[in-house]
Length: 88
Image (cartoon, rainbow, N blue to C red; front, top):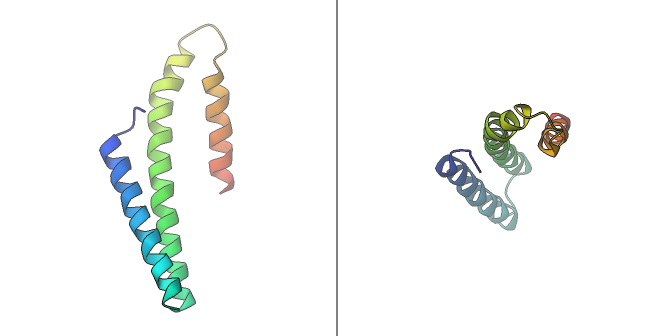
């Protein structure tokens, strides 16, 4: 992986902590809107980490694939991931 590992790991650890907190909120029967807001915050953090990974993939692997004359499956993988990201 070519993305800034420390940054991605930090975001994922925060998201994991948020999920633990959300589970506790559910166990504590907290207000639904508060739980939903925490879920949205976690989703945003995961999306940010994913965008960082995809950017690094495009800047590295895809760029290298474009510099060759043969068709590289990395391009198709990148297109598929971008389509899935656009749908979410």
